[in-house]
Amino acid sequence: MSQKLSRITPPSEIFEESAKSSMAEKVLLILETIAQSEFPLTLETISTSTHLAKPTAFRLLNTLVTQGFIERDPNGRRFQPSAKLRILGINILSVDSIRSQRVAVMKRLVEEIGETCNFNILDGNKVMYLDRVETSAPIRLHVDLGMRVPLHCTASGKLFLSGMTELQVRRSLGNEPFEIYTDKTILSYKKLFPELEKIRQDGYALDESAFLEGFIGIAVPVMNSKQKTFATITAHGPAPRMQEKSIEFYIGPLQQAARDIQNSLSETST
Image (cartoon, one colour):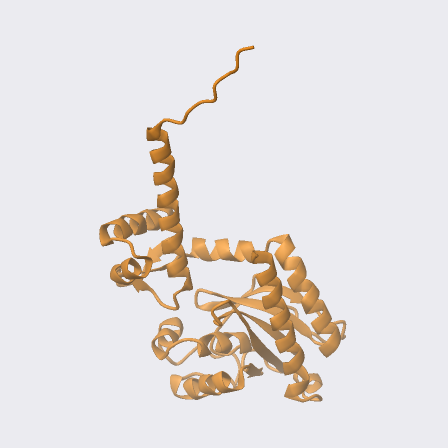
């Protein structure tokens, strides 16, 4: 009985597949480098960080800009994540298998502290509410998922700002005075920077009616593998009700929920 010989892959096809794989790895390496940076990167920095020759890095960067995954900063000399790349990250965080674990943690948190809780991420120069579990208490604040709120006067926003350099904060907020929402809104860098330093020391951020009159928000960080804040867990509710309890009553459960979410993300990625 004759047997069919298996097809032998020609060397040219092996080389082509190897080249495609190598190019894909280089593109992913560049995306990872840019996505993990806290500020826009120059071509030279990207070339050095990825160990790619400048001409290769420049060619791939231009391709990524053309495809809309990264963009140049206003000066045109540095590269940063685009809205398209941020949306891609948001969609990954919204995958059912990942989101279900996160929401389960938040439900336990709401039962423990009795206030509405949100999972928030940084989206450009705004905070976006990605997930939300509401309290059953009769008085509560309604916030739509996907809603974007300012950085300078919300607990989550100030927490994100506290992880930035002074230059990054100024780039994110722009010129002062900042937009006013209540008579407790911080309007200047002179008052904001000391508060950001306090947040770094305390490990949590507080909003006492600076964004919405009569409501308090408390936020703690959710850290990534490099111990950088990539999201926040926030509890908020009417000031009179939340002031009946101490800050410590909320901080412990919030921090435990943040650790549980971090662990669930680590387990999902392995």
